[in-house]
Length: 345
Image 1 (cartoon, rainbow, N blue to C red):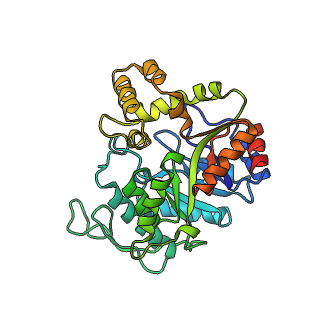
Image 2 (tube, rainbow, N blue to C red):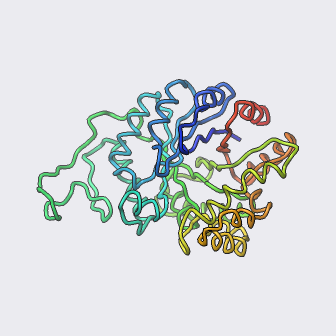
Image 3 (cartoon, rainbow, N blue to C red):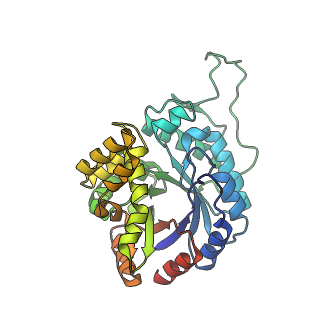
């Protein structure tokens, strides 16, 4: 089992302890460090800034939102960072949700699977640098058609000026639903499992297998990376740890989406918490945040956690590894936790 530090995205302020956490992750044998973005801090600037102090760990985005940048711009970020870190970059991409895509980026959210497929294809064209980049769309048209609204007709196909250090920078995709996970197995090099659950492990493997079986699939199961995001807490006081993460579970299930459109809620429903998800969502939509948090049962919080004594957490890590997880992306916020986890693994 590999370990990765997930720094995530910032809240109201930057993550003050990040430099010490990154240093500890590198010193203690973590495989990678990841950053994220929502509608505040971006993913690439902190990754480059904090990653400049590292020499070994891989540096990844988990995730960069595809609506935040045209695919050629994302490829520019990626090839630039990959040069600067000596070939240690992982491109982690995700579609986000309609509230962010349409409300923050002002773009349509429709057809996220098709958009992702086109996006990845264009990024790979840029990195391969074998020919000028072209895309017939319909979501990303390169060059912009001469007969399209507002076109000057002067657009031309281009190759990147800078030669990428690696033509095969790994692309990992964040995915939660069966169709998205299957497509991830087909076109990507790894899967970023945001809320991994052992109760769904068999279904995850079925979805992955469907993608690997498709004609032209890029990888097989044995050379495909599965990175699961997890809250890992080593403690004798499990109840307090669960209480600490109960608000986060309630937020993602009830507050990170709209009625009828919340991919996190759909995932927890697949885990068997349909009634609880409905009640939490109802309370959140009614503005009853405290009641929504209180409605989250302990077992629902623990579904995506590894928590307990050192020996109990070690046993849980072995269970996740046996289920097919190759990397744990942990949101540690103190050096001691990083050192403890490194000792366990």
